Amino acid sequence: MGTAMIRRATAEDLVALQEIEDAADGLFASVFSIADWQPAPSGVERSRHPGFILVASTEPDSRPVGFAHVIEIPGGNHLEQLSVVPSQTGHGYGRALVEAVKTESTQLGRTRVTLRTYVDVAWNAPFYATCGFAESVPDNDFLRNLLSVERQSGLGYARRVQMTCDLSSVRSGMPATMRNSSRGGYAEDHDRGRMGG
Image (cartoon, rainbow, N blue to C red):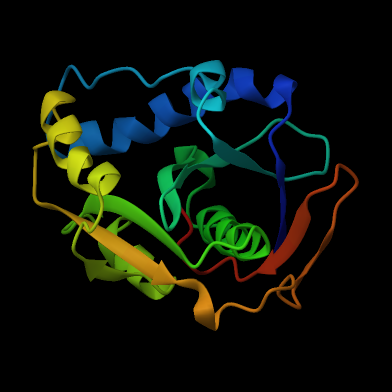
């Protein structure tokens, strides 16, 4: 068992986000044999969207090893990006971030979390299915527009789908395994043997 410290991103955390995402995207570049994967947006760019950013770290005040960027959309929240540095995948940080996103979204009164992901990449759709997400159909303009945004961004290397987690089954409080960390975030005990990136 280990502990993932999950907290809201601070201004200091934002500088690490692009590096984390670029490192994580290197895994996609190798899966799809792509030499010129587009660089990630900066943390400052991400922070301009309405919503929130959570970061995962190994200690309360240490440098983040992963993050989740959530955008407010009509009818819920959208998990725009989940990234964990490759050296820390498989330690539960991704799963802890997803669970914290669900908890935070529930506390904000949202009824669902959506995302878009690759179907046949092990740490994408199969992973999210184990976190309570199921394939769904875009049902508002924001979600439908993501299809063209993905084409313009060059993400058409393999089949992608929308997935949704219905938050009605998520308790409105923090899961029992989560507790406050020193920076106003959460700490979650997790199983090191589970996939988390």
